[in-house]
Image (cartoon, rainbow, N blue to C red; front, side, top):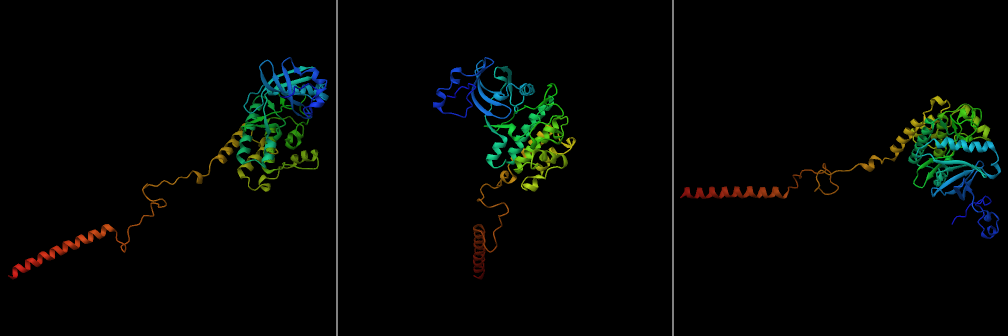
Length: 364
């Protein structure tokens, strides 16, 4: 049974003897909003920690995102967390992690999310040694579809990267972490002029701190596909500033110069998504359709696998085609022709015998 979270236990120390006298045990489990009982710490990052929790009211297992203990008194971080919930809560899409609830407690602001288990897109590709073309196109199409849905609701994700896409056990992609998303109707911290996001995947306009629209997310998804297909990021440098500056001056090296086996069609889609000028990029919906078409094309079996040889003469021995049958050679007469020859000879002999009898009668 998983040990209930008490606020002092971070999930890293499983030594029963040390926990036996832990005063946190006497405090009992942490319950947020008199409803969500924290059960297990699932992960912790610089901006938040995520717990498995039990929803006492609905009797289901959920995920709860909290600020780390050392940041729970920061009003700016609390607003960021609530902004994430408000941005994602307006979305209802099969490839977006669902938000169930948001609230505040003595433990700080919290967000209740759909609990998903699996591996991130980046982890999955690294562990497998690289993505297949079909999987890259399939997951990319799903993420682009989720982004198109967000953009229709006036939300720009602003931090699309392989670690913010979770692949469930059945391969279903889920876009998560709208922590720095910008919603048109959500005022606050992610305003024009603030450079936020993951540097390796930022669009040029994001680096410049300009106002963003959905085409910035398209660029970031293009960067993600570039890295997953080639095994290296599109831009590299000594530090974050140099990496960011490179994308302001030049497009990335074509994918096929790094990995020649990548089809031209894939390279074209990724490079168009990463165009320096946002006006030259497709929107997320168009990118989703294009990647979906590529996924179907490369998932289809080759013509050699589907071609069937149909024998028009079922009784013909295997391995003989219709052009293999040749007429019997004159030097090798068939059995039927021999019978016909013998019959003709007998008729001739009979005629000759009859003539001999007639001649003998006339001589007498």
